Each structure stands twice: as structure tokens, then as C-alpha cells.
Length: 117
Length: 456
Ligand SMILES: [Zn+2]
Image (cartoon, rainbow over all chains, first blue to last red):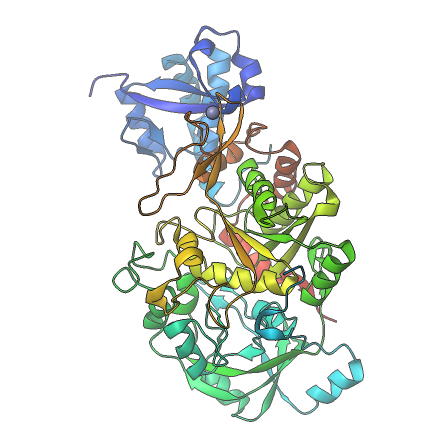
């Protein structure tokens, strides 16, 4: 498959929206349930997708090419990286992979522990 | 016609001895037998029969007074009738190990002193000691198979179905007989606020002056789809006039991992009247102890029985009632309450058949948010020639359980059109306690250790 065919859907609630609303990609989000929740689609190239699938055994690719069943810790880290790098591309994933060991540790506990909001 | 209707089978059971001297006399000299949980293949507790002892003795399952004999279990799986002829959907079996039976040395005609966590609890008068048949066959007979029950069963039951697994994992011998609670337990917080057994619930309904009471079954923290179901069901319940109140009754016990924790279910529903989405004079939240069998249409019969005994006149049934996975048709319960389930020996709807229920069904489909209308619309029911179609003609956004779980587990606040903020706050409150918003194996173990009650 060519690069950029995979995607990750990040859910954006009002609090998350505040952090990204002025960035160029904010206007392209799909709105659901009257606009209080949105979906930010992050594109994933082949190499990155491979690395993600290798890091998280529970992750899978669905029929539409979305990476699903990703750990909460990974998705949170990805969102933080999007905010920090102001990008939905390679820079954001580089940032996430800098602390992948820490994310993997948190992900292992997620069957029984996820930190409350 | 008006609430409270007569109890199922005509008489409300209340086999609870409060008098301490009388209780001591009943237990004197009896062999003790500890009530033990049923364990899943991986050792996780999936049921504790203490909940059935409580629900029988306090009259939730009236007219049932005890655990069933072999004949009665056969009658249940053949035509869902007790030996007295009254409709009842599930076998209630007190199962134990052979070695434990030998060690106790009890036989038919004896009484046995049931203890819970080593504390005095109840007495069972043993009417019969019987051997269970092949447990896998029993579990199939209880729930049905696609071959035999094709009108509603779409997929063969297996270990992933929590109710099927309860029967599959039962111990080989059963004790049948009437049970009496002789040491009434006190409930822990928050359960104590929601414990209102049938005799008290019926009194509450009378005191409030409610005439039309529509029951809502729940094993869920309510989202707005549930709230719409409750409100619209109350609107149609009385037929010629709206209902007076919604009686929310939560099933408390071992649940499927991924369901919400029991404490959040109760307080989540309570939040709806505390925060003003229901008037507290027209909405009450109570509980029943039962390790849910997820038997969709069969479970709906048990729900009808419990809520009739609690004093309700109507019971609302929505899509995928008491279901998990895709074992049953999503509208199997509506099928039962409009046509009966002949393949289970039920030839008419439960409220029409002789020795059936008095409570009446309010059969409804799903409600969903329409972004065009900016409010909820009704989707209707799919069955046979009928197809779900949004009332408003637009494309509403269904609330899927997995979507909502995804939003919540990521720590995001669900939209107000999906879940009331006060309800979400309850989820977070119990998430802080257990480190997780949903049932996990760890939660099931804590629950088995703690139970919902304390015994003196
Ligand atoms: Zn509409």
C-alpha cells in the first residue's frame, strides 16, 4: 500500500477542541451529536503504521484503513503531540515515539487501570 | 388494573425471620453449609447464589419459595412453567460439590443452615438432592439453540455468553427446597439507599398514590436514549392517560466485563431525578440482587415478574433488551410480548397466557439524536415486514455502546445530547474508586469479597 492510506480517528471533546481550534486542520473535523464531539482524522504512513501495530498487539486495521483498538495512553499521547507540534503528520508521531516505552507500560495496565479524568 | 397489581402467582413471598430468638431456634443443631460463588473457567467469580436466596426469600421471585427440584427444572426448560403452572423463565439451582455434600452428610427431609462468609444467613429445608445433567446440555436447554429456537436465537451460545456460562459452570449436585433468611443482612452504601424489596416497594407505590407505574429494567448508566425511552414509555403506559411514575429497577450482581460498575448504575439513575430531569415524585430507583443471565426474551419474563411483584403495572422493553452479543434477535423481547415464543413452550404473550403475568408490556424501539431536528426522534422497530425508519425522516445518529465506551475511557466528556453531565460525573466518581469505569475481573473479585451486604 502507498503511504498515507492509514488513519487514526481521534475523538475531540470540547476541552480538546479548545486546544486545537485555531490550527488549520480544525475546520476539517467531522462533527457528531450536535457538534459537542468531533473526529480528527490523522493520516498514518506505512512505516509508522507498522511500528504502531508492532508496539500494540491489540491494535488492528479495520476495513476503512483506520487503526482501531489502540490503547488510551497512545491516543492521549498522540493528541498531546498534535497540540505541541501543531501538526497531524510525521512530526506528531516522532514526538509520540520518543516516549513509546512509557506508553507501552501504561497500555499494559489498561485492562484494569486507566487514570480517571 | 391499578398499581399495585396482585403479586405473580397470587401471593407475595416473605420468608424472612427478624425475631432473633425464633431464628436461633430454627438454626439450632443444623449442619452448616457455606454459600459459594460459581467460578468461570479462569477462576473469576461469575455468580453468588446468595443473591438468589435473597431475591427468593424477600419475594422478588414470588411465587417461587426455594431452589428447584429436578422435575421443576425440567418443566421450566420445557415450557417455562413452575410445577404450579405459573410462568417462570429460568431454573434456580443451588448447586454444590459431591465431596461437600458428603462432608455435610445432609439428606432429603433435613434442614441445612446456610452461612455466608462464615456468618449465619439462611435455612434451607431440603426437599430433594439431585444430580445435574450434562451442564453444557443444561445451558443450551435454558437459553435455546438456533436449530430449535430459530424465531429468536441467531447464534449458538458459548462460553463468551455470561448467562450460559453460569449454567455451564455449575457444580454437579443440587439441593432443592424452600429458603428462609434468618439473619437479615444490612446493605452497604450506596446499596442501602436503593434496597426496597417488594412489600416495601408496594407500600411506597400506595403511599405515593401512583396508579400507573411503568418499570424500567437497567444494567446500565443511563444515556439520553434511555431517558427518552423512559419518558416516552411513561407517556404511553396508561393507554387512555399517561403513567404516574417510572420505577427504575437495577440488576445488581456479577456482570459482563465492559458493563458499568453497579454503584455507578444506581447513582447514575438517581442523578436523573436529583438533577431535575425527572420529578422525584414520579421516579424512583431501586435494585434487585441477581447475577444477570443476559437472556433477552427470557430475562424479560423474569423482569416482568420482579416488577409486578414490586408494584408496577407496565414494563417497558426496548431494543436488545437484557442482551449481550448477537445471540438473540435485537427484537426478540418484542416478539415474545406480541406473539409468544412457541419454540420455548410459550404459545401466547406472557400477559395473555393463563397463569401468566398481569403486568403489561410497553414495547418500544430505539430513540436517536437527529442533528437536523436538534432533538431525539423515534426509530421504530424492525421485525418481519416492519423496518426501522426515523420518524422525522432525517438521518439520526445512533448512540452505539462501543462509541460511548470509547469516548468515556479516553477521559473525554460525552456530549450533553448523549449523556447528562451529572450522570457522567457519577461515572467518574466510581472510576476514581476502582481505577476503571467498567467491570473488570478485578472488580468482580472485589465484589465477591465484599458483596453488597454485611451480616452481623
Ligand atoms: Zn430529524
